[in-house]
Image 1 (cartoon, one colour):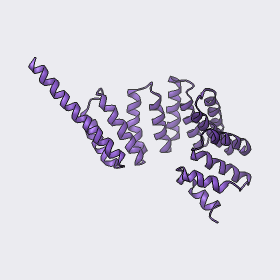
Image 2 (image 1 turned 45 degrees about the vertical axis):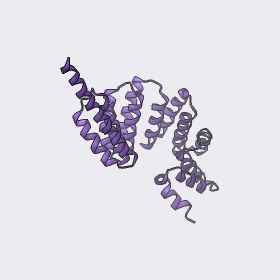
Image 3 (image 1 turned 60 degrees about the vertical axis):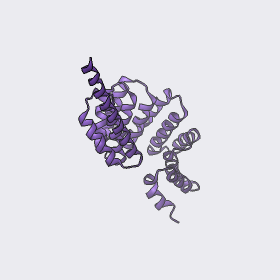
Image 4 (image 1 turned 90 degrees about the vertical axis):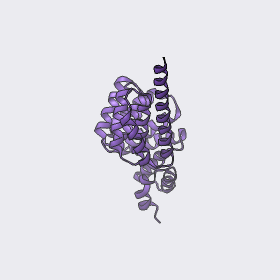
Amino acid sequence: MSHLINTILVLGCVFTLQTSKLSEANAYFDNKQYSKSIEICTHEIDRLSPKDSLYGKFLQLRASAYAELEDYQSAANDCEILLKMNPRNKLKYLDLSYMYGQSGNFDKCEEILHKGLKIIPHDPNLLNNLSYYIALSGKYADAVNYANEGLKYAKDKQTKAFLLNNRGYGLINLDKDSEGLVDINNSINLHPDNPFAFCYRAIANIHLKHWNTVCDDLNKAKGLGAERLTADLIIKYCSN
């Protein structure tokens, strides 16, 4: 009996130490010291069994830290493991598609989302990511179709707004600027804090040569966080 008690005490101490390490890694992450957070996570991941409840938490945190450092391939590697551990978890497909999409690997991004839709059919969030990233790969007609499919099943305003914005972006790139503007305006009405919508509305109005709101929309998008997306457009159209 005493041997069993000692074993339980040792295991309890190890778990407490590892939980403390997770808190430490989270603190470094919150303070934007991503490399330090990765270092702690890697050390603990190497020591833990994949069956340990903390294993996935360290892996998820490390993937997030890699993403903050824009090391999307390393983040994707971690997300691949997390997906294998939780193949029915929608969020794992969304995370992994984001990592591949941000790295520019649109084929892999599309593949992952199709896999997710086979397991979780008609999911509007998976369809939203698919319509967004497939548009970035230049498949605008497909992006419109996937947005249409997502809108059939979307319930909340934000998801509807994102899908409308994706459809609008696809329509703009199919030279259907007026139709695209309708979608984007509706998207902004539903979710007025999406920087992409203001940027895409500016692009549509540039195509239509309707200049009155272009700079206001570009600066609004920039203020909402889309600095890279709008930088060249602001220089070109709003420098005077």
